[in-house]
Amino acid sequence: MAAVGDDLRYGELGPSCRHLCVDMQRLFAEDTEWRTPWMQRVLPRVQEVVSHKPERTVFTRFMPAQHAGEGDGTWRRYWQRWSSMTIAELGDEMVELIPELASFVPPADILDKRAYSPWYQTDLHDRLRHRAVDTLVVTGGETDVCVLATVLGAVDRGYRVVIATDALCSSSDEAHDASLELYARRYSLQVETVTVATIVRNWR
Image (cartoon, rainbow, N blue to C red; front, side, top):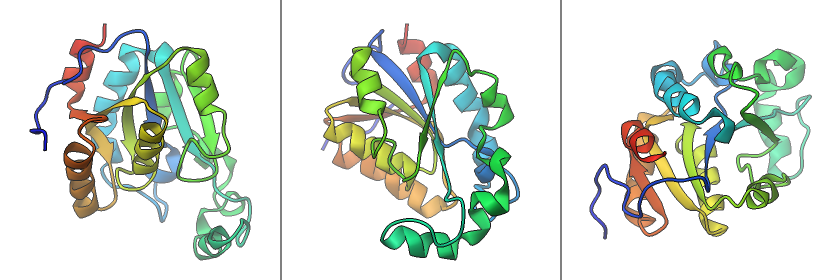
């Protein structure tokens, strides 16, 4: 297994790199049942990556069901359980990005998704391929849910993935730590785990 360190093993980041910022939204940052307590703590690091290359950033947004019990298969049960997190209960405004990040759009883009993965039933892969993108920097939340789905989908599609370890958050410290270990140890040929400082320093 590869050693874990704060270095980009496969070289600097260039014009073929884009930043996927995962689900940094009001419904996770504010006082809801899905509040991620330390999202605000990592926000400055996320902002640092976004402000470095705002025109190369895509913000994903998790879009809840409109009403309880909607969805196919287990998603129907999911939205029955989380009826408090539906659009009908939250209001449309809660799916918006955290205000500190919303100000970067444009030039940053937004991609809406209705599942954990931004690759499922979206045009993300086509968007990136159209721009000759082959490398993705990933920030946001949650480390063990939507970030995990983002990373694995990118790996399946052959992207080089660079995870900003200090710009991720989760509502579970244990799952966050385990996920970082998983990214660094199990996917070391396709995934690099480094700090924001390393990413900014090497993305020219």
